[in-house]
Structures are given as structure tokens and as C-alpha cells.
Image 1 (spheres, protein in one colour):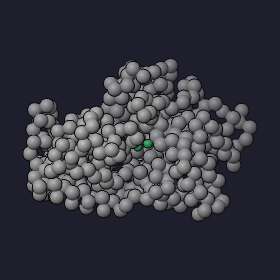
Image 2 (cartoon, rainbow, N blue to C red):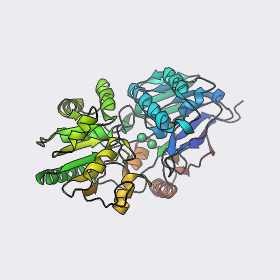
Image 3 (spheres, rainbow, N blue to C red):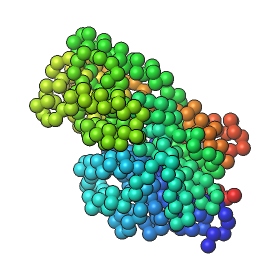
Image 4 (tube, rainbow, N blue to C red):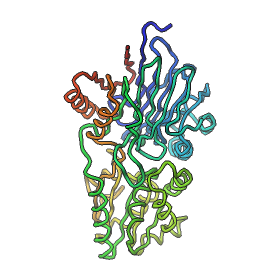
Length: 429
Ligand SMILES: [Zn+2]
Ligand SMILES: [Zn+2]
């Protein structure tokens, strides 16, 4: 059926938007393809916005780059009528179960799939490891660490000799939790599909953010206050725990929310983390909040609380904010991205406590512990893989355009497309 040698990439989500990534990669002229990710985003009212879907009967396999909902939240839809094989690392599969069940608990009303489809997806997963290659009906897929969160993969799909790399979400620097992406192992690509969340900006050196976090903590503890650190339960919470575990801060550290289960998954899959001993130390030394009695105790004496959700959209972090936010001795340190419309963003922009007109009196800080490569990091991926063509996904429109022009100024021969949802990009050789 193929008229010309080459591949197509159909963008089902993640075009000119951060998150909701979903791309179908296939041979030109064929309906069949391999799906990389199928994520969900949330609108300003916190309602789910699913990625578009390709007819499930044409899906040869699904590859899940990592367990964040903006990469997996649409995937169970493919299991309503079919049951394609899914490839993911073990920690991704374990976390996907937690994330999708939690998603249904909060958004079941808006979801076209239910627990049964989540179960079928989880049962269809074949575990893969970094460095492994699999054959999917004559198409080869290979997996490398993307350095973003434990278990995250950079996927290379090879169709008739055309090598297509998909970054998923990627980080190119070392953190306490993660080694950088395995860029040196990938080799030359023909096409690179890259995220560009921070395609037009730079992160300050990680060491500065760590130093600043510790300085704020010391300052607040000296005044007898409590420090609340709202953090995502996947990766950011553990990264903060590891930074704290390196220092003897002399006060109890409480950890609350889904961070605990995720920490246990990381410890059981310790080959996927940079410094398992440090995470183990934090796990052994810190106090995991087990119920309301613990929760009510945690904020009453000077100490540190690491709690989900990272944007204070709910969960224990919101409970603690309401308890400690009225006292200027305390501090709230945001360490995650704060989406427009979230409680965290409102704190930053208006300085008001959630669902009230009361001002926040505690000290408020926002530090950059991003797990995404910045503009320089993203350019280093292109430098390492030398693609002829680049497709920019998982990026706001302006950021994607600016990143595209940075690529063109450094490598004038590289063809760069800024992906649009529901468009198909053809690459012939
Ligand atoms: Zn993402
Ligand atoms: Zn991610």
C-alpha cells in the first residue's frame, strides 16, 4: 500500500499546548500506527480535556513515556473496544495505576472510560527497560531514560530505516532523584519529536534553588515557624525529601499524601533513581502522616511539612495552608509549576487565602525545581541526535515558535515544524 518510503506523525494532542501529548507514528500510506502517549489536560475549571483518538483497531501498540496524567489520561479509551499491547517501564506501570484510579475518583463523571478499562490497560502492559528493543510487527522500538521522572522513556521508533525519536518529557541535568537523559546512547535520528515546555527560557542552576530552599527553612525555623512545601506526589515530593535528608535540620519532617506510595514504588525500583540511598534515608527518618490525628499534630510545632497537591488544588497541602497561612512566622514554599486558576497561582498573584478574602500572612516563596529541560537543554538534545527534521510538541504556541527559530538559527538545514493538533506530518526519505 505504501506509495513512498517514509513515515507520518499524526498529532492527536500536545500541539501548541503543554501536556495532553499523543502522537501516532506509522508508515506512509498505512492507517496502522504506534501510539506514543495519550494524555489528558485540565481546563480553567479543572475539567478534563482528553486528547483526540485514532480508531483503536489501527493501533499496533501503545508506548507510555511516563506516568504523568498529561501522557496517560486518555490511554484507557483505547481499551473500550480493543486491547492493544502497551509498553512501559515497571515504575510507570505501577504509578499509572495510582494516577488513573485517582483521576477516576475525581473526574469519573466526565470520563468516557471506567475502572474496567483502566484494569484492561494495566493488564496489557509489557514491561520494558532502558536499552531494550522490541519488534512491533516489523517496526522496531528502542527505549532510553529521559531523565524526567523515574521510569520516563525517550523512545526511538524505526520504520524502514527511518529513525523517529520521541522525547516524552525530558530533562538533561542531574538532580538528586534523576540522572540526566541518556542522550549519548540514542545515535543519529531522522526525525525528532520534542517537548519544548521551556523552549524559550532558562532555569537557574539547580544548586541555587537548593541553597535558597535551605536558607528559607533555617530562617523560618529560627523564628519558631513551620514550613509548608506543597509538592507533586510523583518525583517533586521525593526530590525535596532527598534535599532535606542531606541536612540535619533538627526538626521533624512530615510527609503527607500520595507521596508515600510513590516513594515506595521508587524504592522498589531503585535502579530507576539516581541516589537510592538518600531516598531510603528520607523514607526511614521522616514521619509519614497516617490520618487526621497525625495531620492535626504536624503543623502545631516548628517543623517542615512536604505534602501533595503541588498546586494546592486539594489534598493535605490545602488543609495545612489553611492552618498555617494566617501566621507570619510560617512559610509556604512552592516548588512546582502553578497552573493558571490553581490555588497556588492565586496565592502568588493575589496573596489571598483559598476561597476567602483573607490575606496570606505567612511568607510565600516560589522556587524552580523543574524536571523539564530548559532551552539550552533542549538544544543539547538536537546537538546529540542530529535530526534532519524536528516536530515541536508539548509547548505553548509562542514558546514553540521561539524554540523553532532558535533551532533554525543554529542549524539552518534542519526543517522545523511546530505541531498542530489533528495535523499529519509526512517525512519522506
Ligand atoms: Zn508532560
Ligand atoms: Zn511529565
